[in-house]
Length: 288
Ligand code: UDP
Picture 1 (cartoon, rainbow, N blue to C red):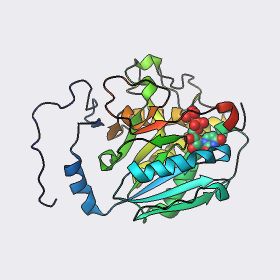
Picture 2: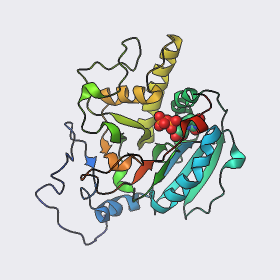
Picture 3: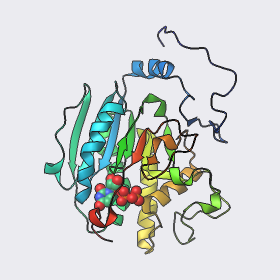
Picture 4: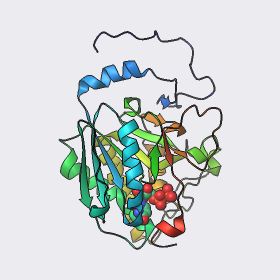
């Protein structure tokens, strides 16, 4: 660290209204739970690159413009960000002026006539991208859903070895209400008596090696399910939840990092940083 001036840490919790630590002592990141000056002073010197994958297949390309423009305003500003846009419609990717140190690469992918298929294939494509292209070219990776938008700061406080986000709709519910996969025949099965949080599949992050292990494991579990002719209730999100149950994330992002435009804001949400935008499923999905 270089010498900087910042406020002395307090001995009490700045956010007594919410838990800022999991039972396994992974921080849960909330507004006012961190000092960005200190965090930036640590990470800026590391000269890191954050790879960011976004899938925009079929009609979902329409969400790219808002997502990318808002990311340029709010996401990892001041850091090197390499976007990898997976799409079957490369010509429809908007042309944007990116900030310094920020790049965008289009990854041509096949289209699909089933939206579930796209969600089932993301793990495999991220796994391949890390193995074939990223291992020497990036430090951290985030996978983000395209039908979303940044509304507020999302910076280096979100970085960690393995990062999951707490799903806005399930935050505060009891574990038996989570929409985990409940059929024991699926590899994503979680019994009603288990579970910590319900994690959103729209945001996965961490160091490359950790996310590689996650995507590889989930992809193998998805393959096994496919061979057994079973599809988990929320496809890759179900497998992600299973993975995080037995491989605990080292950092948890509060629902500030994955809100939903449809959802009212309770008092504990001081800021919405990233949120899922309203969409008309009938209009944008290839199948009902
Ligand atoms: N997706 C896509 N094209 C599709 C369906 C899904 O590109 O036809 C990608 C896109 O990145 C989207 C993500 O898969 O953000 C998750 O799908 P979706 O938003 O439909 O799932 P939901 O969050 O609504 O359950």
